[in-house]
Image (cartoon, rainbow, N blue to C red; front, top):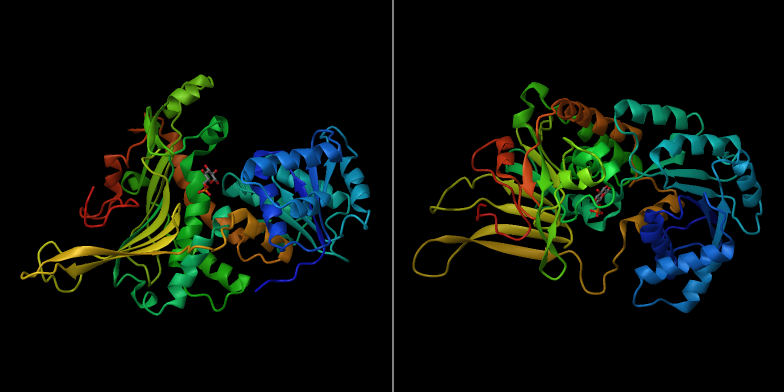
Length: 501
Ligand code: BG6
């Protein structure tokens, strides 16, 4: 169902940054091409430098040319480019926000419903909100005003709460859109539908039938040019605190009363709050960290490339030692009747042998072991790069004897002709529609930090050398220490579950 969007202006802070170049501008362009932007909609890009409108439009064209190598529709381009304006907001100019207000007050050009997208350094979130408020640009008495805050919302619980306290001086909760771009992925949205729109899954979705769940994000990429950010952050805060805990919430939450944002968020909050804190004294059996060392990774068309280790990359930047993890695996338990006793393994790593994000669910042993070597069922919801649902079942090998083998039923979620929508596209649309269901409530953010903070602290305090895994390899064998039982093992995207690695 296409929702109606009010005429509005999107004010893009950090417009010349990487996110805007690679995702936001191309995403807005595609929304325009799909006819999803209202006719009266303008984009005001805000940056530190003085740039003319013409130069900025030329820069946008470059962004689109880089993204859409096969070209694009000229008429759509003309329409899109005409929506775009630029406003210089140098930090040194005390009057910058008053000037922005003056610019925006031209109602002929800028519809007065305003959505601010803050794609800036996290330390700038609160000051920008304060300045906007000071200039009267958050006042909702006549038009709506919304503020989208990029990740991370704080770097721990106290800083997230401090940020919340400072922005809520100027904003109501309904005006705040805290983004987690994983929620914009259509395969992630499919988790809820798979669970609740099919009769065959929900009855089995509990500790009576499920042995354990693995939520995995593996990447081939390393930390790239983000060494400083990454070294201050680590895999746990970068991926687990946000994207993977949100994925877990969708996998494990109770059925929402309806699909309203309030109902969905309420169930996610309950679930996140029900995750048992990790026992810090016994952390080694519940959490494992490692760093990639030099190795060889797979690039594109099956070719290999030698890459440096994480510590070597840091050394080049003048950092001589670090215990920051590029691999993190946690064992989590959920204290509610549905999940009592079921381990949820959440893991993420850079520089692995493959890039894949998936939820793999292993069911318990069948009540009757008919033949030797009978495997347990697995259900995989693959999020990326392939979006598919894969079910592994035991089946008789045709022939005179009774023996079974594992069959894999692999259903691609995406079919030829289906729309391929980037997560930022759908989230930008939701922002303009005023639909916060795919954005985080502050209680979710808090529950996520509350769980992660003690582990981050314990790991930071332990300065002993971190386990190394060669770039391009699979999970370090030692990570298996967190498994609850000796017959559990890490799943990867391609193999059948019966083949243990
Ligand atoms: C970001 C992290 O939030 O998510 C990155 O900062 C990570 O380190 C990225 O690579 C993964 O997102 P996606 O959409 O590529 O899976």
